[in-house]
Image (cartoon, rainbow, N blue to C red):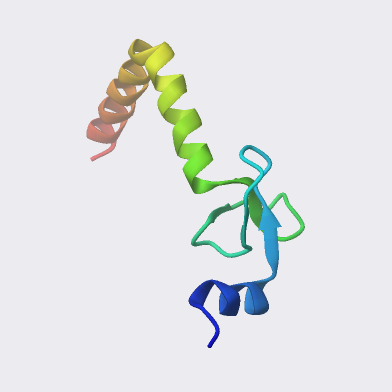
Length: 79
C-alpha cells in the first residue's frame, strides 16, 4: 500500500529544500509559489522560510512594526 507522500512524489516529483536539505514532494503544500523558478516553486520549504522570517523579525522588530503601521495608514487613507 502506498502512503500519501509516495503518491504525491509520483504525481508532483520530488524537490530538495536548499536550506535544510530534506526532500519533499514538489507541490505547494511544502513549497511556496515563485514564478521566477522553472518549476514555479520557491527553493526552500515553507518551514525553513518561516523560521528565517521569524529570525529576521527577532533581530529588528521595530522595522516590521513601522512597516505595518505605514501599511495600515495607507489602507485607511485609501478607504
